[in-house]
Image (cartoon, rainbow, N blue to C red):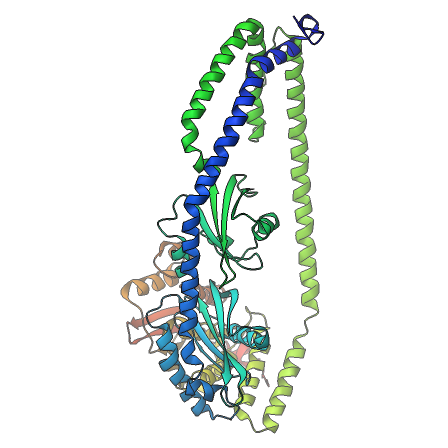
Length: 622
Protein backbone atom coordinates (compact mmCIF):
# COMPACT_ATOMS: atom_id res chain seq x y z
CA UNK A 1 0.00 0.00 0.00
CA UNK A 2 1.35 3.39 -1.09
CA UNK A 3 0.20 6.83 0.05
CA UNK A 4 1.62 9.54 -2.18
CA UNK A 5 4.73 7.47 -2.86
CA UNK A 6 5.28 6.48 0.77
CA UNK A 7 5.24 2.71 1.35
CA UNK A 8 3.53 1.47 4.52
CA UNK A 9 6.02 -1.37 4.73
CA UNK A 10 8.86 1.10 5.16
CA UNK A 11 7.26 2.84 8.16
CA UNK A 12 8.08 2.02 11.74
CA UNK A 13 5.53 0.36 14.03
CA UNK A 14 4.57 3.63 15.68
CA UNK A 15 4.25 5.33 12.31
CA UNK A 16 1.97 2.58 10.98
CA UNK A 17 -0.29 2.83 13.99
CA UNK A 18 -0.36 6.60 13.72
CA UNK A 19 -1.31 6.51 9.99
CA UNK A 20 -4.08 3.97 10.51
CA UNK A 21 -5.67 5.83 13.43
CA UNK A 22 -5.47 9.18 11.63
CA UNK A 23 -7.04 7.82 8.42
CA UNK A 24 -9.84 5.71 9.89
CA UNK A 25 -10.64 7.47 13.17
CA UNK A 26 -8.97 10.77 13.71
CA UNK A 27 -9.70 12.59 10.48
CA UNK A 28 -13.44 11.66 10.13
CA UNK A 29 -14.13 12.14 13.81
CA UNK A 30 -12.28 15.49 13.87
CA UNK A 31 -14.18 16.84 10.86
CA UNK A 32 -17.60 15.72 12.09
CA UNK A 33 -16.91 16.72 15.69
CA UNK A 34 -15.59 20.17 14.77
CA UNK A 35 -18.61 20.97 12.62
CA UNK A 36 -21.06 19.67 15.23
CA UNK A 37 -19.37 21.41 18.15
CA UNK A 38 -19.02 24.76 16.38
CA UNK A 39 -22.60 24.94 15.15
CA UNK A 40 -24.20 23.67 18.38
CA UNK A 41 -22.09 25.93 20.60
CA UNK A 42 -22.99 29.03 18.62
CA UNK A 43 -26.68 28.13 18.76
CA UNK A 44 -26.56 27.50 22.51
CA UNK A 45 -24.69 30.75 23.18
CA UNK A 46 -27.24 32.75 21.23
CA UNK A 47 -30.12 31.03 22.99
CA UNK A 48 -28.59 31.44 26.48
CA UNK A 49 -27.78 35.10 25.84
CA UNK A 50 -31.30 35.86 24.65
CA UNK A 51 -32.92 33.97 27.52
CA UNK A 52 -30.87 35.61 30.26
CA UNK A 53 -30.40 39.12 28.86
CA UNK A 54 -33.87 40.17 30.03
CA UNK A 55 -33.07 38.96 33.56
CA UNK A 56 -29.86 41.01 33.63
CA UNK A 57 -31.71 44.08 32.36
CA UNK A 58 -34.37 43.65 35.06
CA UNK A 59 -31.66 43.36 37.71
CA UNK A 60 -30.13 46.59 36.45
CA UNK A 61 -33.54 48.33 36.56
CA UNK A 62 -34.02 47.15 40.16
CA UNK A 63 -30.60 48.48 41.18
CA UNK A 64 -31.33 51.84 39.50
CA UNK A 65 -34.64 52.00 41.35
CA UNK A 66 -32.92 51.19 44.65
CA UNK A 67 -30.35 53.98 44.21
CA UNK A 68 -33.00 56.43 42.97
CA UNK A 69 -35.19 55.74 46.02
CA UNK A 70 -32.17 56.30 48.26
CA UNK A 71 -31.44 59.58 46.48
CA UNK A 72 -35.06 60.71 46.91
CA UNK A 73 -34.92 59.94 50.63
CA UNK A 74 -32.08 62.49 51.03
CA UNK A 75 -34.06 65.43 49.57
CA UNK A 76 -35.62 66.47 52.94
CA UNK A 77 -32.12 67.35 54.18
CA UNK A 78 -31.50 70.07 51.58
CA UNK A 79 -33.78 72.86 52.85
CA UNK A 80 -34.35 71.70 56.41
CA UNK A 81 -33.93 74.60 58.91
CA UNK A 82 -31.91 72.45 61.26
CA UNK A 83 -29.51 71.56 58.46
CA UNK A 84 -29.21 75.25 57.55
CA UNK A 85 -28.38 76.05 61.18
CA UNK A 86 -25.81 73.23 61.11
CA UNK A 87 -24.17 74.64 57.94
CA UNK A 88 -24.12 78.25 59.16
CA UNK A 89 -20.87 79.82 60.31
CA UNK A 90 -22.38 81.22 63.50
CA UNK A 91 -20.89 80.04 66.76
CA UNK A 92 -22.90 77.61 68.87
CA UNK A 93 -22.52 76.92 72.54
CA UNK A 94 -21.83 73.27 73.41
CA UNK A 95 -25.34 72.94 74.76
CA UNK A 96 -26.89 74.52 71.67
CA UNK A 97 -24.80 72.23 69.48
CA UNK A 98 -25.92 69.26 71.56
CA UNK A 99 -29.58 70.27 71.15
CA UNK A 100 -29.12 70.68 67.40
CA UNK A 101 -27.47 67.27 67.06
CA UNK A 102 -30.25 65.66 69.09
CA UNK A 103 -32.95 67.21 66.89
CA UNK A 104 -31.19 66.12 63.71
CA UNK A 105 -30.81 62.57 64.99
CA UNK A 106 -34.38 62.32 66.27
CA UNK A 107 -36.14 64.12 63.41
CA UNK A 108 -34.09 63.59 60.24
CA UNK A 109 -31.87 60.58 60.84
CA UNK A 110 -34.64 58.56 62.47
CA UNK A 111 -37.05 59.41 59.62
CA UNK A 112 -34.55 58.16 57.04
CA UNK A 113 -33.48 55.05 58.93
CA UNK A 114 -37.04 54.02 59.89
CA UNK A 115 -38.11 50.89 58.06
CA UNK A 116 -34.71 50.39 56.41
CA UNK A 117 -32.34 47.61 57.42
CA UNK A 118 -29.71 48.52 54.84
CA UNK A 119 -28.42 51.71 56.51
CA UNK A 120 -25.41 51.14 58.78
CA UNK A 121 -24.90 54.76 59.72
CA UNK A 122 -25.43 58.40 58.73
CA UNK A 123 -23.08 61.36 59.07
CA UNK A 124 -23.48 65.11 58.57
CA UNK A 125 -20.27 67.06 58.02
CA UNK A 126 -19.80 70.76 57.26
CA UNK A 127 -16.84 72.88 56.21
CA UNK A 128 -16.86 74.44 59.69
CA UNK A 129 -15.65 71.03 61.01
CA UNK A 130 -18.99 70.22 62.63
CA UNK A 131 -20.11 66.60 62.48
CA UNK A 132 -23.21 64.71 63.57
CA UNK A 133 -23.05 60.91 63.32
CA UNK A 134 -25.44 58.06 64.09
CA UNK A 135 -23.97 54.55 63.87
CA UNK A 136 -26.05 52.82 66.52
CA UNK A 137 -27.19 50.22 63.94
CA UNK A 138 -23.60 49.31 63.04
CA UNK A 139 -22.51 45.82 64.15
CA UNK A 140 -19.63 45.55 66.62
CA UNK A 141 -17.51 48.29 68.16
CA UNK A 142 -16.46 51.21 65.95
CA UNK A 143 -13.56 53.62 66.07
CA UNK A 144 -15.56 56.82 65.54
CA UNK A 145 -12.36 58.85 65.20
CA UNK A 146 -11.59 56.95 62.00
CA UNK A 147 -15.10 57.59 60.67
CA UNK A 148 -14.86 61.32 61.46
CA UNK A 149 -11.45 61.50 59.80
CA UNK A 150 -12.87 59.76 56.73
CA UNK A 151 -15.82 62.20 56.68
CA UNK A 152 -13.46 65.17 56.70
CA UNK A 153 -11.57 63.69 53.73
CA UNK A 154 -14.86 63.42 51.82
CA UNK A 155 -15.70 67.02 52.75
CA UNK A 156 -12.36 68.11 51.30
CA UNK A 157 -13.43 66.58 47.95
CA UNK A 158 -16.80 68.36 47.97
CA UNK A 159 -16.16 70.28 44.74
CA UNK A 160 -15.42 67.05 42.87
CA UNK A 161 -18.76 65.42 43.77
CA UNK A 162 -22.06 65.68 41.94
CA UNK A 163 -25.24 66.61 43.85
CA UNK A 164 -25.77 62.94 44.71
CA UNK A 165 -22.55 60.95 44.58
CA UNK A 166 -21.92 57.22 44.88
CA UNK A 167 -18.49 57.38 46.52
CA UNK A 168 -17.85 53.61 46.50
CA UNK A 169 -16.95 50.84 48.87
CA UNK A 170 -15.53 51.45 52.33
CA UNK A 171 -15.44 49.64 55.66
CA UNK A 172 -17.39 50.53 58.77
CA UNK A 173 -15.57 48.54 61.42
CA UNK A 174 -15.27 45.09 59.88
CA UNK A 175 -18.37 45.45 57.71
CA UNK A 176 -18.03 46.28 53.98
CA UNK A 177 -20.30 49.20 53.13
CA UNK A 178 -21.40 51.21 50.11
CA UNK A 179 -20.94 54.93 50.80
CA UNK A 180 -23.09 57.58 49.11
CA UNK A 181 -23.19 61.34 49.68
CA UNK A 182 -25.62 64.25 49.12
CA UNK A 183 -24.18 67.76 48.78
CA UNK A 184 -25.85 70.39 51.00
CA UNK A 185 -25.80 74.12 50.34
CA UNK A 186 -26.35 77.17 52.50
CA UNK A 187 -29.58 79.00 51.55
CA UNK A 188 -28.06 82.34 52.44
CA UNK A 189 -24.98 82.06 50.20
CA UNK A 190 -26.11 79.31 47.79
CA UNK A 191 -22.70 77.67 48.26
CA UNK A 192 -22.18 73.99 48.96
CA UNK A 193 -20.93 73.75 52.52
CA UNK A 194 -21.73 70.25 53.73
CA UNK A 195 -22.25 66.59 52.97
CA UNK A 196 -24.80 64.02 54.04
CA UNK A 197 -22.88 60.72 54.08
CA UNK A 198 -24.82 57.43 54.22
CA UNK A 199 -23.14 54.02 54.72
CA UNK A 200 -25.17 51.07 53.42
CA UNK A 201 -24.64 47.37 53.91
CA UNK A 202 -24.74 45.14 50.84
CA UNK A 203 -27.71 43.00 51.92
CA UNK A 204 -30.29 44.80 49.78
CA UNK A 205 -28.00 44.80 46.73
CA UNK A 206 -27.30 41.12 47.35
CA UNK A 207 -31.03 40.39 47.53
CA UNK A 208 -31.55 42.09 44.16
CA UNK A 209 -28.69 40.17 42.54
CA UNK A 210 -29.68 36.83 44.09
CA UNK A 211 -33.25 36.87 42.77
CA UNK A 212 -34.77 33.37 42.50
CA UNK A 213 -35.04 33.78 38.75
CA UNK A 214 -31.25 34.04 38.47
CA UNK A 215 -30.57 30.32 38.82
CA UNK A 216 -27.51 28.45 37.64
CA UNK A 217 -25.02 31.34 37.49
CA UNK A 218 -23.51 34.17 39.52
CA UNK A 219 -24.57 37.81 39.16
CA UNK A 220 -22.18 40.49 40.40
CA UNK A 221 -21.67 44.25 40.06
CA UNK A 222 -18.59 46.07 38.77
CA UNK A 223 -17.92 49.78 39.36
CA UNK A 224 -16.54 52.29 36.86
CA UNK A 225 -12.91 51.62 37.72
CA UNK A 226 -13.21 47.83 37.70
CA UNK A 227 -13.80 47.44 41.45
CA UNK A 228 -16.24 44.68 42.43
CA UNK A 229 -19.09 46.40 44.30
CA UNK A 230 -20.96 43.17 45.08
CA UNK A 231 -20.23 39.47 44.51
CA UNK A 232 -21.87 36.33 45.97
CA UNK A 233 -18.37 35.39 47.14
CA UNK A 234 -17.84 37.97 49.91
CA UNK A 235 -14.06 37.50 49.66
CA UNK A 236 -14.14 39.16 46.22
CA UNK A 237 -16.05 42.29 47.34
CA UNK A 238 -13.77 45.31 46.97
CA UNK A 239 -11.23 43.52 44.75
CA UNK A 240 -10.33 44.60 41.22
CA UNK A 241 -11.53 42.70 38.18
CA UNK A 242 -8.67 41.10 36.26
CA UNK A 243 -7.40 43.37 33.51
CA UNK A 244 -8.35 41.11 30.60
CA UNK A 245 -11.95 40.67 31.70
CA UNK A 246 -12.30 44.39 32.53
CA UNK A 247 -11.05 45.41 29.08
CA UNK A 248 -13.45 43.07 27.31
CA UNK A 249 -16.42 44.31 29.32
CA UNK A 250 -15.51 47.94 28.58
CA UNK A 251 -14.69 47.56 24.89
CA UNK A 252 -16.90 44.68 23.76
CA UNK A 253 -19.53 45.73 21.24
CA UNK A 254 -21.66 42.68 22.02
CA UNK A 255 -23.41 42.29 25.37
CA UNK A 256 -21.94 38.79 25.85
CA UNK A 257 -18.70 36.94 25.14
CA UNK A 258 -16.69 33.90 26.13
CA UNK A 259 -14.07 34.20 28.84
CA UNK A 260 -11.56 31.78 30.39
CA UNK A 261 -11.64 32.19 34.17
CA UNK A 262 -8.04 32.17 35.38
CA UNK A 263 -8.97 31.32 38.99
CA UNK A 264 -11.15 28.26 38.32
CA UNK A 265 -9.75 27.41 34.82
CA UNK A 266 -13.31 27.13 33.53
CA UNK A 267 -14.70 28.71 30.40
CA UNK A 268 -17.70 30.95 30.95
CA UNK A 269 -20.12 33.02 28.97
CA UNK A 270 -20.14 36.56 30.35
CA UNK A 271 -23.29 38.72 29.98
CA UNK A 272 -23.08 42.38 30.98
CA UNK A 273 -25.34 45.41 31.04
CA UNK A 274 -24.26 48.92 32.08
CA UNK A 275 -26.49 51.35 33.98
CA UNK A 276 -26.62 54.95 32.81
CA UNK A 277 -27.72 56.12 36.29
CA UNK A 278 -25.14 54.50 38.57
CA UNK A 279 -22.41 53.78 36.04
CA UNK A 280 -22.27 50.22 37.40
CA UNK A 281 -22.10 47.16 35.17
CA UNK A 282 -24.21 44.11 36.07
CA UNK A 283 -22.28 40.98 35.05
CA UNK A 284 -23.45 37.36 34.91
CA UNK A 285 -21.11 34.35 34.67
CA UNK A 286 -22.64 31.31 32.93
CA UNK A 287 -20.32 28.24 32.97
CA UNK A 288 -20.41 26.65 29.53
CA UNK A 289 -20.62 23.23 31.20
CA UNK A 290 -24.12 24.18 32.35
CA UNK A 291 -25.15 25.00 28.80
CA UNK A 292 -24.23 21.75 27.06
CA UNK A 293 -26.66 19.46 28.83
CA UNK A 294 -28.74 19.21 25.66
CA UNK A 295 -25.73 17.88 23.77
CA UNK A 296 -25.42 14.66 25.78
CA UNK A 297 -27.53 12.65 23.34
CA UNK A 298 -25.54 13.88 20.36
CA UNK A 299 -22.34 13.13 22.25
CA UNK A 300 -23.47 9.56 22.87
CA UNK A 301 -24.14 9.09 19.15
CA UNK A 302 -20.71 10.49 18.41
CA UNK A 303 -19.12 8.13 20.90
CA UNK A 304 -20.95 5.20 19.32
CA UNK A 305 -19.66 6.20 15.87
CA UNK A 306 -16.17 6.57 17.32
CA UNK A 307 -16.45 3.13 18.89
CA UNK A 308 -17.35 1.60 15.53
CA UNK A 309 -14.38 3.28 13.93
CA UNK A 310 -12.21 2.08 16.79
CA UNK A 311 -13.33 -1.54 16.20
CA UNK A 312 -12.37 -1.26 12.53
CA UNK A 313 -9.01 0.21 13.50
CA UNK A 314 -8.41 -2.51 16.07
CA UNK A 315 -9.25 -5.18 13.49
CA UNK A 316 -6.64 -3.69 11.16
CA UNK A 317 -4.02 -3.12 13.79
CA UNK A 318 -4.70 -6.44 15.59
CA UNK A 319 -2.66 -7.76 18.37
CA UNK A 320 0.24 -5.48 17.48
CA UNK A 321 -1.65 -2.39 18.60
CA UNK A 322 -2.76 -4.17 21.76
CA UNK A 323 0.84 -4.82 22.69
CA UNK A 324 1.40 -1.06 22.52
CA UNK A 325 -1.79 0.23 24.14
CA UNK A 326 -1.43 -1.90 27.30
CA UNK A 327 1.93 -0.44 28.36
CA UNK A 328 0.80 3.00 27.24
CA UNK A 329 -2.28 2.69 29.45
CA UNK A 330 -0.09 1.71 32.38
CA UNK A 331 2.19 4.63 31.64
CA UNK A 332 -0.82 6.97 31.50
CA UNK A 333 -1.96 5.88 34.97
CA UNK A 334 1.53 6.43 36.35
CA UNK A 335 1.66 9.87 34.71
CA UNK A 336 -1.76 10.73 36.21
CA UNK A 337 -0.40 9.89 39.66
CA UNK A 338 2.62 12.10 39.02
CA UNK A 339 0.31 14.93 37.86
CA UNK A 340 -1.51 14.72 41.22
CA UNK A 341 1.84 15.05 42.99
CA UNK A 342 2.21 11.36 43.91
CA UNK A 343 5.83 10.45 43.23
CA UNK A 344 5.68 7.20 45.22
CA UNK A 345 5.58 4.78 42.25
CA UNK A 346 5.86 0.98 42.21
CA UNK A 347 9.52 0.01 42.60
CA UNK A 348 9.18 -3.04 40.35
CA UNK A 349 9.32 -2.03 36.69
CA UNK A 350 7.53 -4.17 34.10
CA UNK A 351 9.55 -5.44 31.19
CA UNK A 352 7.90 -5.80 27.79
CA UNK A 353 8.74 -7.68 24.64
CA UNK A 354 9.09 -4.38 22.89
CA UNK A 355 12.45 -2.91 23.91
CA UNK A 356 11.22 0.56 22.98
CA UNK A 357 8.52 0.39 25.71
CA UNK A 358 11.07 -0.84 28.23
CA UNK A 359 13.32 2.11 27.37
CA UNK A 360 10.36 4.49 27.70
CA UNK A 361 9.54 3.20 31.19
CA UNK A 362 13.19 3.43 32.22
CA UNK A 363 13.29 7.03 31.03
CA UNK A 364 9.98 7.77 32.82
CA UNK A 365 11.25 6.40 36.15
CA UNK A 366 14.48 8.36 35.76
CA UNK A 367 12.50 11.51 34.96
CA UNK A 368 10.16 11.14 37.98
CA UNK A 369 13.14 10.53 40.28
CA UNK A 370 14.82 13.66 39.01
CA UNK A 371 11.57 15.66 39.32
CA UNK A 372 11.16 14.48 42.90
CA UNK A 373 14.70 15.58 43.71
CA UNK A 374 14.24 18.98 42.03
CA UNK A 375 10.90 19.60 43.82
CA UNK A 376 12.55 18.82 47.14
CA UNK A 377 15.37 21.24 46.36
CA UNK A 378 12.93 23.97 45.27
CA UNK A 379 10.86 23.44 48.43
CA UNK A 380 13.95 23.68 50.66
CA UNK A 381 15.17 26.79 48.84
CA UNK A 382 11.75 28.46 49.19
CA UNK A 383 11.70 27.72 52.92
CA UNK A 384 15.14 29.27 53.29
CA UNK A 385 14.12 32.27 51.18
CA UNK A 386 10.96 32.78 53.27
CA UNK A 387 12.98 32.53 56.48
CA UNK A 388 15.41 35.16 55.19
CA UNK A 389 12.50 37.45 54.23
CA UNK A 390 10.96 37.10 57.70
CA UNK A 391 14.27 37.93 59.32
CA UNK A 392 14.66 40.93 57.04
CA UNK A 393 11.17 42.20 57.92
CA UNK A 394 11.88 41.76 61.62
CA UNK A 395 15.12 43.69 61.21
CA UNK A 396 13.29 46.49 59.38
CA UNK A 397 10.62 46.59 62.10
CA UNK A 398 13.22 46.83 64.85
CA UNK A 399 14.98 49.56 62.90
CA UNK A 400 11.73 51.56 62.58
CA UNK A 401 10.90 51.08 66.25
CA UNK A 402 14.33 52.27 67.28
CA UNK A 403 13.62 55.63 65.62
CA UNK A 404 10.51 56.27 67.69
CA UNK A 405 11.36 58.67 70.50
CA UNK A 406 8.71 58.57 73.23
CA UNK A 407 10.05 61.83 74.67
CA UNK A 408 8.80 63.55 71.52
CA UNK A 409 5.24 62.56 72.51
CA UNK A 410 5.74 63.76 76.10
CA UNK A 411 7.25 67.09 75.03
CA UNK A 412 4.49 67.64 72.46
CA UNK A 413 1.80 66.97 75.07
CA UNK A 414 3.55 69.32 77.52
CA UNK A 415 3.50 72.06 74.87
CA UNK A 416 -0.23 71.48 74.32
CA UNK A 417 -0.72 71.61 78.09
CA UNK A 418 1.16 74.92 78.30
CA UNK A 419 -0.98 76.48 75.57
CA UNK A 420 -4.14 75.18 77.25
CA UNK A 421 -3.11 76.73 80.61
CA UNK A 422 -2.15 79.98 78.91
CA UNK A 423 -5.58 80.20 77.25
CA UNK A 424 -7.33 79.14 80.48
CA UNK A 425 -8.60 75.88 78.99
CA UNK A 426 -8.18 73.84 82.15
CA UNK A 427 -10.28 70.92 80.91
CA UNK A 428 -7.93 70.50 77.96
CA UNK A 429 -4.96 70.89 80.30
CA UNK A 430 -6.23 68.13 82.60
CA UNK A 431 -6.94 65.79 79.70
CA UNK A 432 -3.52 66.45 78.14
CA UNK A 433 -1.77 65.86 81.46
CA UNK A 434 -3.74 62.63 81.95
CA UNK A 435 -2.92 61.42 78.46
CA UNK A 436 0.80 62.22 78.94
CA UNK A 437 0.82 60.26 82.18
CA UNK A 438 -0.84 57.26 80.49
CA UNK A 439 1.75 57.32 77.67
CA UNK A 440 4.59 57.45 80.19
CA UNK A 441 3.06 54.80 82.43
CA UNK A 442 2.12 52.37 79.65
CA UNK A 443 5.63 52.38 78.17
CA UNK A 444 7.00 50.85 81.34
CA UNK A 445 7.47 47.10 81.79
CA UNK A 446 4.00 45.54 82.17
CA UNK A 447 5.18 42.90 84.63
CA UNK A 448 6.94 45.15 87.15
CA UNK A 449 5.71 45.39 90.74
CA UNK A 450 4.72 48.88 91.92
CA UNK A 451 3.01 50.35 94.99
CA UNK A 452 -0.77 50.40 94.78
CA UNK A 453 -0.63 54.20 94.87
CA UNK A 454 0.94 54.27 91.39
CA UNK A 455 -1.76 51.99 89.95
CA UNK A 456 -4.50 54.10 91.57
CA UNK A 457 -2.91 57.27 90.23
CA UNK A 458 -2.86 55.75 86.72
CA UNK A 459 -6.52 54.74 87.15
CA UNK A 460 -7.41 58.30 88.26
CA UNK A 461 -5.91 59.75 85.07
CA UNK A 462 -7.77 57.17 82.98
CA UNK A 463 -11.04 58.08 84.73
CA UNK A 464 -10.35 61.78 84.08
CA UNK A 465 -10.35 61.02 80.36
CA UNK A 466 -13.53 58.92 80.63
CA UNK A 467 -15.25 61.66 82.64
CA UNK A 468 -14.56 64.09 79.83
CA UNK A 469 -16.18 61.64 77.45
CA UNK A 470 -19.19 60.72 79.61
CA UNK A 471 -20.37 63.87 81.35
CA UNK A 472 -23.05 62.12 83.44
CA UNK A 473 -20.68 59.47 84.78
CA UNK A 474 -20.62 59.36 88.60
CA UNK A 475 -17.29 58.15 90.01
CA UNK A 476 -17.23 57.13 93.67
CA UNK A 477 -13.71 56.45 95.05
CA UNK A 478 -13.45 55.45 98.71
CA UNK A 479 -9.77 54.61 99.33
CA UNK A 480 -7.66 54.84 102.49
CA UNK A 481 -4.58 56.84 101.42
CA UNK A 482 -2.48 55.26 104.16
CA UNK A 483 -2.97 51.78 102.67
CA UNK A 484 -1.83 52.74 99.16
CA UNK A 485 1.86 52.81 100.14
CA UNK A 486 1.87 49.47 101.95
CA UNK A 487 0.22 47.30 99.26
CA UNK A 488 1.93 45.83 96.21
CA UNK A 489 0.39 45.75 92.72
CA UNK A 490 1.44 44.72 89.22
CA UNK A 491 1.72 47.52 86.69
CA UNK A 492 -1.31 47.85 84.33
CA UNK A 493 -3.70 45.48 86.13
CA UNK A 494 -6.42 47.75 87.56
CA UNK A 495 -6.97 49.89 84.46
CA UNK A 496 -7.90 46.89 82.16
CA UNK A 497 -10.57 45.80 84.68
CA UNK A 498 -12.05 49.32 84.81
CA UNK A 499 -11.87 49.54 81.02
CA UNK A 500 -13.78 46.23 80.91
CA UNK A 501 -16.60 48.01 82.78
CA UNK A 502 -16.99 50.56 79.99
CA UNK A 503 -16.75 47.95 77.20
CA UNK A 504 -18.84 45.08 78.62
CA UNK A 505 -20.45 46.33 81.82
CA UNK A 506 -22.36 49.09 80.03
CA UNK A 507 -22.56 47.47 76.59
CA UNK A 508 -25.32 49.16 74.59
CA UNK A 509 -25.84 52.02 77.11
CA UNK A 510 -23.91 54.99 78.48
CA UNK A 511 -21.99 54.53 81.75
CA UNK A 512 -23.59 56.23 84.75
CA UNK A 513 -21.74 54.93 87.84
CA UNK A 514 -18.35 53.47 88.81
CA UNK A 515 -17.31 52.75 92.35
CA UNK A 516 -13.80 51.93 93.65
CA UNK A 517 -13.25 51.06 97.29
CA UNK A 518 -10.66 49.20 99.38
CA UNK A 519 -10.83 46.79 102.29
CA UNK A 520 -7.95 45.59 104.47
CA UNK A 521 -8.07 41.87 105.40
CA UNK A 522 -5.67 39.82 107.45
CA UNK A 523 -3.85 38.05 104.62
CA UNK A 524 -4.64 40.25 101.64
CA UNK A 525 -5.78 43.70 100.63
CA UNK A 526 -8.94 43.98 98.48
CA UNK A 527 -9.70 46.59 95.80
CA UNK A 528 -13.43 46.44 94.96
CA UNK A 529 -14.64 47.68 91.55
CA UNK A 530 -18.40 48.01 91.12
CA UNK A 531 -20.71 49.23 88.34
CA UNK A 532 -24.47 49.56 87.84
CA UNK A 533 -24.51 48.25 84.30
CA UNK A 534 -26.25 45.38 82.53
CA UNK A 535 -24.89 42.68 84.85
CA UNK A 536 -24.62 38.99 84.02
CA UNK A 537 -27.02 36.08 83.86
CA UNK A 538 -26.30 32.79 85.66
CA UNK A 539 -24.63 31.20 82.63
CA UNK A 540 -22.29 34.16 82.13
CA UNK A 541 -21.40 34.23 85.85
CA UNK A 542 -20.60 30.52 85.73
CA UNK A 543 -18.45 31.08 82.66
CA UNK A 544 -16.40 33.95 84.19
CA UNK A 545 -15.94 32.17 87.53
CA UNK A 546 -14.93 29.01 85.71
CA UNK A 547 -12.21 30.93 83.89
CA UNK A 548 -10.87 32.57 87.06
CA UNK A 549 -11.07 29.42 89.22
CA UNK A 550 -9.63 26.88 86.77
CA UNK A 551 -6.03 26.38 87.87
CA UNK A 552 -4.98 24.50 84.72
CA UNK A 553 -5.74 25.15 81.06
CA UNK A 554 -8.24 28.02 81.47
CA UNK A 555 -8.18 28.31 77.65
CA UNK A 556 -10.31 25.13 77.56
CA UNK A 557 -13.01 26.95 79.52
CA UNK A 558 -12.86 29.80 77.00
CA UNK A 559 -13.25 27.45 74.04
CA UNK A 560 -16.04 25.44 75.66
CA UNK A 561 -18.31 28.47 76.00
CA UNK A 562 -19.38 28.67 72.35
CA UNK A 563 -22.32 30.97 73.00
CA UNK A 564 -20.22 33.88 74.26
CA UNK A 565 -18.36 36.55 72.34
CA UNK A 566 -14.94 35.43 71.03
CA UNK A 567 -13.14 37.83 73.42
CA UNK A 568 -15.37 37.28 76.49
CA UNK A 569 -13.14 36.76 79.58
CA UNK A 570 -9.76 36.97 77.83
CA UNK A 571 -8.82 40.38 79.31
CA UNK A 572 -9.91 39.35 82.83
CA UNK A 573 -7.99 36.08 82.52
CA UNK A 574 -4.86 37.98 81.47
CA UNK A 575 -4.98 40.22 84.58
CA UNK A 576 -5.75 37.25 86.84
CA UNK A 577 -2.85 35.18 85.52
CA UNK A 578 -0.37 38.07 85.80
CA UNK A 579 -1.31 38.65 89.45
CA UNK A 580 -1.10 34.96 90.34
CA UNK A 581 2.20 34.45 88.52
CA UNK A 582 3.67 37.45 90.37
CA UNK A 583 2.24 37.05 93.89
CA UNK A 584 0.86 33.50 94.18
CA UNK A 585 -2.33 31.47 93.77
CA UNK A 586 -4.08 33.09 96.79
CA UNK A 587 -4.17 36.47 95.02
CA UNK A 588 -5.80 37.61 91.79
CA UNK A 589 -9.23 38.57 90.48
CA UNK A 590 -12.58 37.37 91.89
CA UNK A 591 -16.16 37.89 90.70
CA UNK A 592 -18.05 38.83 93.88
CA UNK A 593 -21.54 39.26 92.46
CA UNK A 594 -23.44 40.22 89.31
CA UNK A 595 -27.18 40.79 88.95
CA UNK A 596 -28.84 41.40 85.56
CA UNK A 597 -29.75 45.09 85.08
CA UNK A 598 -28.27 45.96 88.51
CA UNK A 599 -24.53 45.72 88.03
CA UNK A 600 -21.36 43.71 88.67
CA UNK A 601 -18.75 43.72 91.46
CA UNK A 602 -15.16 42.45 91.05
CA UNK A 603 -12.53 42.18 93.77
CA UNK A 604 -8.76 42.34 93.19
CA UNK A 605 -6.77 40.70 96.00
CA UNK A 606 -3.23 42.06 96.51
CA UNK A 607 -0.45 41.33 99.03
CA UNK A 608 1.00 43.70 101.61
CA UNK A 609 4.54 45.00 101.35
CA UNK A 610 7.17 43.84 103.78
CA UNK A 611 8.69 46.49 106.04
CA UNK A 612 11.85 46.58 103.90
CA UNK A 613 9.87 47.00 100.68
CA UNK A 614 7.72 49.76 102.20
CA UNK A 615 10.89 51.59 103.28
CA UNK A 616 12.14 51.73 99.68
CA UNK A 617 8.91 52.86 98.02
CA UNK A 618 9.93 55.25 95.20
CA UNK A 619 8.40 58.71 94.99
CA UNK A 620 6.84 59.47 91.59
CA UNK A 621 6.80 63.16 90.76
CA UNK A 622 5.01 62.64 87.47
